[in-house]
Image (cartoon, rainbow over all chains, first blue to last red; front, side, top):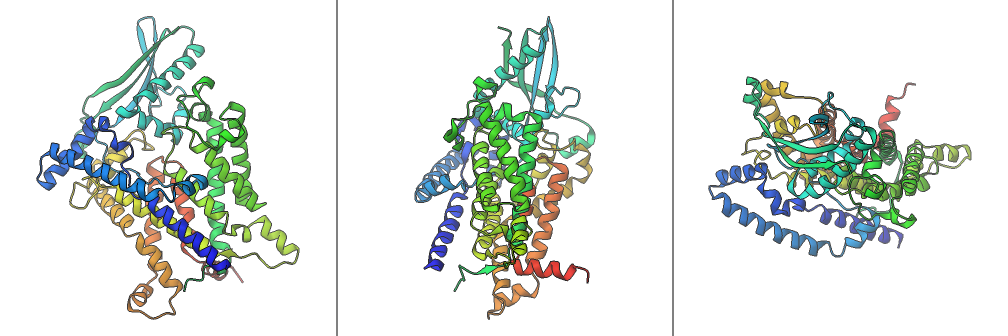
Length: 209
Length: 304
């Protein structure tokens, strides 16, 4: 009896883990994110490899992703309660592609008419609260907020950064949070010492109340 | 017939226990020391950055500053007790609960190591992982009782978890930069990304072909992971007949596979900052060997 009980539990657990690990598109289902040049570049690469039009491939991919997500949800129904109760849900979408247009977070403060950058991701020269920003959880957050689907969180976070900076520095009257989005140099460009220009995106400015 | 209730020396699951206990205690300690928890695990009303999600911390009144600090303290203390094997099942339960209560709070503020931590702690709860290299085991010996053994089924589930993780992440890698017939440039781009790299890495440009080789080898490594559990099973049942089993047992496939994985994760740790993921994963490698194998290997190396 004991052996059978262990067998049933072990098989159920193994099946639940397996079903939960079926790839899901996750935030990739947000078509707003598809406007990002990294995603568009990915579709262009695949359309060249497959010899199809990029637009047709995008429509087909979206339909396929919806179908897979629907099937995945149905498959998970018997396991959902178990996965939630035991904390054994799976999520293995790690470094799924080459992010050719990554973002770099920046926070600047305005004193009079002068903007000064107080934080830039991984920059020792602009290192306000760098210890916090450098933790893996903050870096994961900032990575997600640099996509269109993460903007509302970025806006919310900027208010907290601004409140902290206003409290710390009495002379400043505004805080600006933005991402610099730039194409990563190819290896050839890096060898030549050239770096593509970036542009500021998701710019949020909070003025002192 | 699979011997579901078979017991074995607890050394393999004990190693997994030590790795996860220390890694989680260290991770929570860093969150505490840097104050990052105030941004990530607090609601906006308390100085956090974004609205939080629901987790088991709701059972004790939600993520108030006092509650989050208490749960972090519980997580650190139970992580250390778990690693030491002191009141192991209780420490395991407290650690699993703390991990679940904290890691799900911040939307986007986590990684795959959150899933791995939750999944592994749950299985360890039923494994008997306190039976070796633990204060609990030392107390048993002092009381004149035989060492407690672990459930082999739990170790097999941990090995399965490792394979599922590698294989699933491989199937997520559908980018044209990952597949062998594509540009194989993912590693180059990942290493240039300020969010993840440990230091500026444009100096790698002359070695670009090596990053392409690394991309290809990583993709092949992850896709071949189901062979790991098969190899472990063939090793376990090597007395049985069968051509495929015999071929697999000519060399122990687990050793080159896990050696490659070790190099891969060390390189990840050196070049990228991806949290506790590599430590967790390497800790799980111990589950690919039976308790007897680990005990034999350690006994062989012990000086006379």
